Amino acid sequence: QVQLVESGGGLVQAGGSLRLSCVASGRTVSIWNMAWFRQAPGKGREFVATISRSGGVTWYSDSVKGRFTISNNNAKSTVYLQMNSLTPEDTAVYYCAARPVTANDYEYWGQGTQVTVSS
Image (tube, one colour):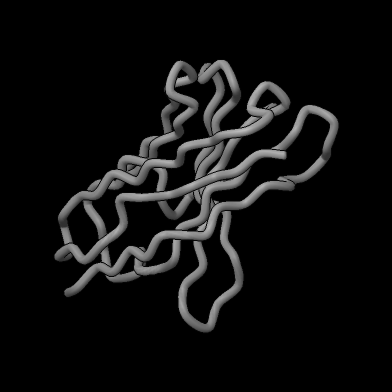
């Protein structure tokens, strides 16, 4: 089992920045890659970014490319999401997810952290 705990959400004005953190614990050696998703009010869950275990491979959704940066620190079992140039459309609950080596999908999820961007 893997446990994920997000932090760093909050209220920010449009154009501002936030950095989210996700700390993994438990069987972290079983993790293949990690990702951030988000869910805005009344909408479905949306993929934001993903990073390989080594940190060498990253991928972003078109809606955040160029503004958000995903990174990791394996020594701290932590994944980060640096969010710049935030807009009200980025308002959502942000979730951290982990995909085990043996799985084809993300099986572990955090509880989420709220990000609210005011105009």
